[in-house]
Figure 1 (cartoon, rainbow, N blue to C red):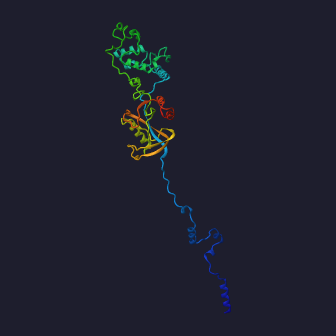
Figure 2 (cartoon, helix red, strand yellow):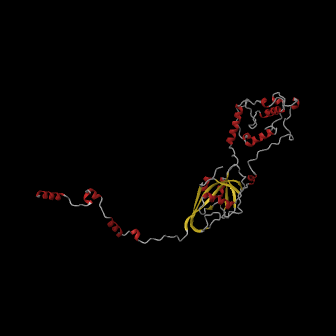
Figure 3 (cartoon, rainbow, N blue to C red):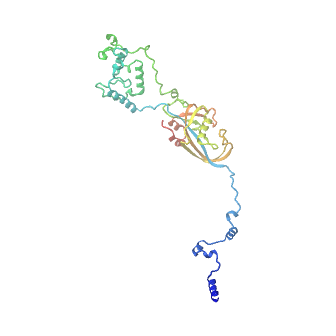
Length: 383
């Protein structure tokens, strides 16, 4: 009995007392994760004041004066492209004639009887022309590609054979039944003994070409110079057909510029350029704005800021209210455009423009201000 009680006392002494969950956490975890009751943490957060939220809110600042900005303008650069090829240089004219004569010398002889039956009027006419110009070609002058002088196919100084006008005249004279040049009369003796008329004796000393009554009416090409070129009509689109022309307007102050107007509301540069053409030069032009991006810009800073009241534009639905704006300068963005048909009209201009002109690049330089020309010169084509 004593033994059993002693054993129970020993067992009870070895049983540990009730412990908390903290006693079962290792020392390293307790040091790295300190425990804190949620209630005490919330009370501490409430007791500490937050300087960001305890101060009274600051009311928003409203602008009382006019806006400060630059005046943004859209300017369509309307052009008429060249309608004719450019004039050839003297070197190009001589080179092309040289190539024609070289081809005449290297090609096979003209097969005459393949095209003309022997003894027919067409054969007689061919022999006469061949005796004068010495070759089958009609626009290379008096040149023989098979004689002893065939090597001499270059053009001498002041020789007009290479001029396009001389070649056109030779083709027209040949079509009319005339010689390409005013040569001496051709008879039977000039054709190597072949008759060019029914009677050999009758053909001697006679020019075998059609009379004025028998001559064919050949239509001549339209000249490169037009009536507008002769009159120097700067408002005509029919002048300088081999060059690109650009539309300039004369403003109220007398200066010359491309048409321009400010951008209203939420319209983009493409829309502003199209509207500017309508309000400045009327609706009698069929135009096409090439792209949506500007091809250049021009910036100007005023000496002193200008207070401007911008009024709404009736053609822009997003510009309904007027406002004041303090402008420090203007920025002009140029938009490329083409005219397809029609003509400009400043009679109903809404910007006060007085006149317009269609000018080539070098003529634009003479009209505009040097600073403006520096901004636009690289946008304009040389021809």
